[in-house]
Amino acid sequence: MTQLITITNPQSAVAEAYRTLRTNLMFYSVDKPLHTLLITAVSAPEDKSEMVANLAVAFAQSGHKTILVDADLRRPSQQSLWGVSGERGLMTMMTDAATMANPPLVATSVENLSLLPSGTLPTIPADVLSNQRMGDIIGVLKARADYVLFDAPPVLSATDAVLLGSRMDGVILAIRAGKTRRDHLAQAQQALARVHVRLLGTVLTNAPRERSQKY
Image (cartoon, rainbow, N blue to C red; front, side, top):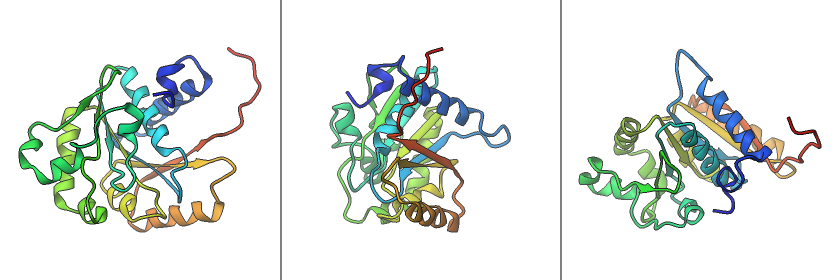
């Protein structure tokens, strides 16, 4: 869990940035509060898995029951980040009706935070994510937590993020400083807009740190 700075160094400026992002999302809209969030990237992973994991920790640390879902059914990485088994998880709920009443959530070292790994990877992830059962799973998870965060593949690499994003309260794009191309970012935004995804904004990762005095 060395990449989870909200755990390893909670007093750092980076951890504080995640808490600021958490607060902004919590108060983003009074009329339509956010409970399900999807974090994706443009065309490459661009730190999105580490970002969603740290953001989930920030929500949990504030006392809110949080579920982190590894919905990247192509290159899942949450089980590696957390050091847990990924054999049972989201795909288990898709194929085993009994798990809808008792989701195969994995407890983490962070109070209030549970992880739903990817499970066995499907042949065609897009078919899974567009299935009506996925909507039922989202409903089950929402009933068990204050916030449910989904880690999805990059927008331009597969249709998965677009399909799943249309079911979310909001979507965040992770972009990497000095790496993400502006034309690719524009293409990703257009792809999400075509299906009326609620794009909340972008989060810049790997940005140079400003040399400023500590408060």
